[in-house]
Amino acid sequence: AQSVSQHNHHVILSEAASLELGCNYSYGGTVNLFWYVQYPGQHLQLLLKYFSGDPLVKGIKGFEAEFIKSKFSFNLRKPSVQWSDTAEYFCAVKNAGGYNKLIFGAGTRLAVHP
Amino acid sequence: DTAVSQTPKYLVTQMGNDKSIKCEQNLGHDTMYWYKQDSKKFLKIMFSYNNKELIINETVPNRFSPKSPDKAHLNLHINSLELGDSAVYFCASSQTSGGHTGELFFGEGSRLTVL
Image (tube, rainbow over all chains, first blue to last red):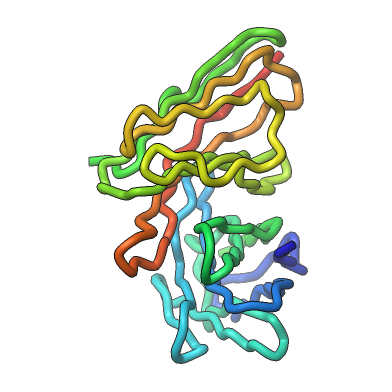
């Protein structure tokens, strides 16, 4: 069965620090990968996604993620975080074929201090 | 216009009661979902409907019964509510046919508290 592991449960950074959130998945076939963000009290919004092509994908708000197939990883990065990036971040994976069943990681809570 | 809307946003009820949460999407998508987010923020898929047909049914108690009257609506009815049902329930939709990427669009969530 597919699973997603996010190693950092809680990250605390100061503004302007660089961010990297880890995401590893387990599935042997072709996958589609996503990062979603949930701001306090709000619904999930898509930050970026990878389906094929360039393994370095750029999303909204200056976020990017790199798909490394050999490491089954899809880490999220941002060179300089802002206080407004405080949120919960979820990595998700789905089998590229079959039903559109997204499996989510447990989430990483990011707190950015001014 | 809200793309995926759920009602109610908050629901507080006693154990043993029956309650429903409604979801509507105006994106013209062909697939809708219910996800449950527990107190630790863990998101787990419960059900998915494609054009009113149930296609994903995870290990969910029989007390949970989804209903899709048309492809724009997916309601969730819960019988005999238990304390462990307390969670935020998110509805989502996506377009999965016609070469679309299947990106999920989420509603704002319905926070259910069972006392």
